[in-house]
Length: 178
Image (cartoon, rainbow, N blue to C red; front, side):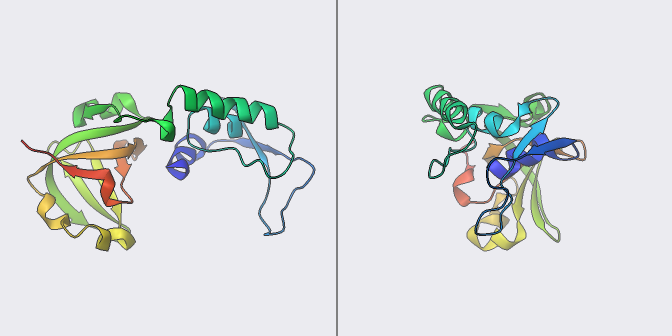
């Protein structure tokens, strides 16, 4: 979910990187603060929206701010810290709810396998749920989705003008009773 969240907010955006006392860790990972014009310090933003947790093993410049952002997200049950069910919307309401973690309820009109993803299209094709092809074996009931009312939970994003949720795990897709 954090990867989808970051993609939604950072893809094709101009960013600025700043660094702390260590630029690269022992695993050769770049350690940077990501800044955007729209959100400011993106590291803090992703914490405040509940899509990340603070790693406290080492000291760093924005430690107290990050701890406060995560604490607030937990308190408000944002993102992955939500305790109850996620809000549920219909496929036609997806365009107005981009960038949110929620459930979309729709009738699956067709299932189409492409190279990297398997697409589950809503009846009006205004929304689709995508399953990565490498995860298809986790979804044995995939072919039975056609014609069923589904509820797909995940991060609602847009690709080529169409709202979508990428479902990595079976727990994200539920067959509803009509």
